[in-house]
Image 1 (tube, rainbow, N blue to C red):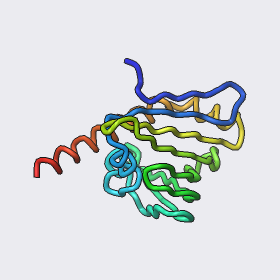
Image 2 (cartoon, rainbow, N blue to C red):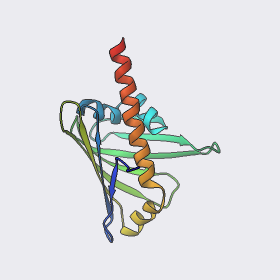
Image 3 (tube, rainbow, N blue to C red):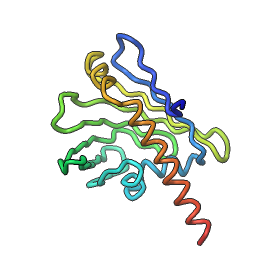
Image 4 (cartoon, one colour):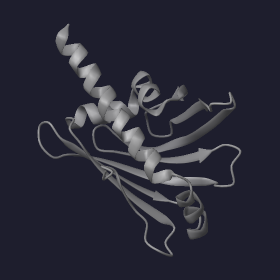
Length: 160
């Protein structure tokens, strides 16, 4: 089955380009990235901090099946509602270092939208290490959950 989230990694480059079209209006897609309760549901993580503003920050924590806690955090450098978020991302206690992420949100129709993520790593070698993980499969699964979670929340809100 073809993955809906597309991950493009050019050989020798230290960046990734990730795109995904969602059957969600732009406002709902953006909300899924900034509302802690929704983020927790689709990312399967605990939101410890989420400050959606320029010079804001975030801190998330996830627990693996063995009960080990893993943290990741970053600083928000640019925040334009329903348009873009520029932020750093760091997985704590890993060799990957900090990456820079440019998230752009685009309306395609009244009911569909697109997310484009441009991720820059310190080196091509670090980017290649990340690509050795089940990264593409994982982000596709997370985006599928995002679509499902927001659909359920939207249906629930309409039903009330």
